[in-house]
Structures are given as C-alpha cells and as structure tokens.
Image (cartoon, rainbow, N blue to C red; front, side, top):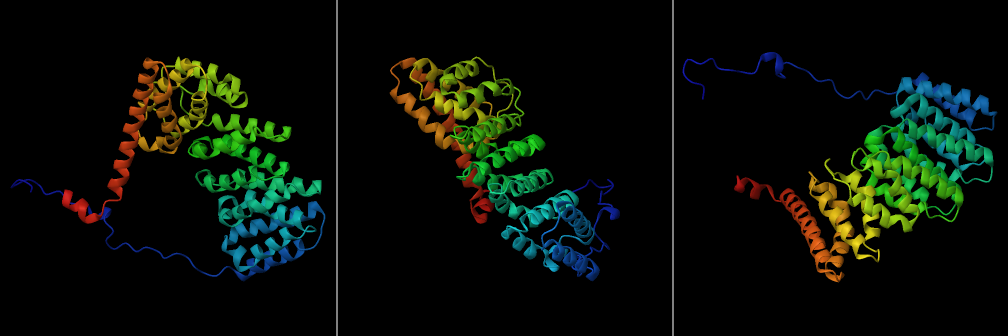
Length: 367
C-alpha cells in the first residue's frame, strides 16, 4: 500500500494493450498466377533438359516461390512433383537443381519443405552416375549452408544416419556436411556436440581411407566449435588421441597439468570425456589417478548441472570401478573423491527433475 499522500504509480496507458487490435494470420490463397508459373516450371523440369536450362528454370521458379511464400509449393503440387523427379533417374539432376535453387534463393522460407528430402539426396550421393552424385552433393551443401543455425540439430541427425550407411560415398558427404555446419554455425553446433562426437569418432576408424580423412577433417571442425579457453589448446592432442589410442596416456597427462578456470559446459565435456573414458582403461595406475583428478576438477566448474547429464551414465560407472579395483590406496581415495563430486551433480539433477515433475497442488502447498 502506498503511504498516504504519496503519488500512486500506475502503468501508463500507452504501455497497455487497451484498444489494440491484433491482425489474424494471413491465410489467403496464393495468387493463381504464381501457382500457374510454378506448375509450368515443374512441368518443364519433368522432362530431360540441359543443365544450364534446368538451372535457369529452377532459379526463376525459386524467385516466384520467394515472392508467393512457401505455401505456393504445396498449392501448386510442386513438392509432389519434386519427389517424383527424385525417384526417376532421368530427372534426378533436375530435382537436385530445384532444391539447390530453393535453398539459395528462399533460404529459411522453404526450409521446412526441403530439409526432409536430405536422406534422399544422401542416397543419390552414391549413384552410379558421377554427374548425379555431383548435383546431389551440391544440393545438400546449398541446403545446409542456408538453414537456420538453431535448427541444425534435426539436419545433423539425418547426417548421422548417413555416416552409418554402408556406402562410403554417402559417409564422406555426411562427414563433410557435418564439418561445414560446425564451421558455419559453431555456437549452435556446439550444443549438438554430445551427439556428434561418437558418430564422427567412429567414422575415423572406417576401413575406407576417404571416409577416415573426411571424418578427421570433420572432427577438427567439430572440436573448434568449443568455446572453452582451457580446452581449446588441447584440441589437436584430443583428436590425435582418438585416432591413435597409444597417445591417450600422454593426452591425459597434459590435461591433468592444466588449471581449469572457465566454467565447464556440455560441449567441453563432449570432447574430453571420450579421452577420459579411454584413460580409465589404461594399465598404469598413475594415468587412472590423473583421470580421476581431471574429472573432479572439471566437475567442480560445472555451473549448470544439467550440462553433465549426458555423460554421467558412462563416466560414473568407470570412476566407481577404479575406486574399487585399484591397488594403490591413495589413488582409490582420489577416485572416491571424484565419484562423490559426480554423485553430487547427479543428485542435483535428480532434485531438479523431481521438482519439475511435482504436481501443481504440491507446489502450491509448499508455498
């Protein structure tokens, strides 16, 4: 209550929503001229034509789509026609050209409609005809260069499946594209590192040299997306340890001599935990002890406990095993200390999640 005589403060009229009308979503039909133009272009592209003519037609159609809006692709039946073109070997290149034009001209406007076609494009990257492989890879590149950075997770999951394919050409393109997304949008990609690291790491051990090289390049670009200044200097050593297991002990030694001062987040953990897990398998007690020291030091710098959640199921059992199995009492004590720190993080996460799951009436009663 305001004191007697004190001026009462009220929200100014201009800041309220009184007398303000909100326009409804525009659900008007697409201009019939635009629909006809798109249909005419897709009809022309349904037949075999020279690459330069296909590009001209596709670019012209993409400009129409940009002006008319993405709904024009549905209303004109262009998306259905496009899927048919992709299914026919004679018109695959035309379909790739259309997708590339839509991506570069319309950018995120057409993204919801063309991104789901990436798996089909990946399959075409292993086609027996070189020209089809080239246009398919180009379409994937154009789509991924023009997506909204914060929507990259759904695209990356399609690429992860591509890395797991049996045909090496698909694996190479998928790895290259993952790397290009990491380089183009490092901040957004960094949040996807916990999912990306295992997939790319496995590809680095592929039997095909082309896949191994593409995965190694992608891994470098993935790790460079990490912003943690304490970890960045060790990125080359971490990548080398993934490729060469005999270097794990040396990498653990380097990490243990580092004084971590910056807050540790999920991306930083994504590139260090795989090496720490390998360090847990080393024979020397000294290396295992250093792993526990690193885990304890990094865990204490995790401000948001949820950042560590993806790594606890794999890391905690290993540290617990070391705390029980190592013969050196002092090393077991260090491991037990690290395990306790991880346990505190897990407890904090569990408490947060249980609080979120609490029924509203219980929450109100607690107030």
